[in-house]
Length: 113
Length: 115
Image (cartoon, rainbow over all chains, first blue to last red; front, side):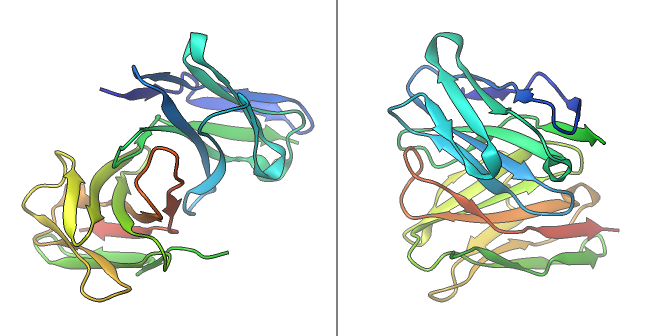
């Protein structure tokens, strides 16, 4: 069965610092990978996705993620975080023909001023 | 940009009552989904719906739950007799085609509190 692991439950970084949120997946075939962000009391907004091709994908709000097949990882990065980036971040995976997304546990990001 | 809309945004109901959560998916989408998120936990898949029938459902989606597309625009989730543990945020979502190379778009969610 597919699974997604986000090892960090809570991360705190200072405003302006770089950020990397980790995501590892377990699935035998080619996965389709997503990062979603959820601000407090809000819905899920798609940050970026990987389907095929270039393993470094760019998303909204200055985020990027890199697919590394050898490590089964899809880590999310941002070179310089802003206070407005404080939110919960979810990694998710789907597979060809799948009817559902499988989500990780989420990583809560806190920004220090 | 087209979006998935959900109503109500928040509902409080007494245990044992029936609840209907409503969703208007993106207009040209053919696949519809419900997910839920219990407070502090991960987002969990409930059910997917295509061509007027359930295409997949999770273990959570038991006989207490049902989905319906009563007309060309709405997609509803009904919980027949709510339990305390049904308290959660329920997300509706839709996609143009099946997942795996296609993006699923989520609504803002409906908070359900069962008391």
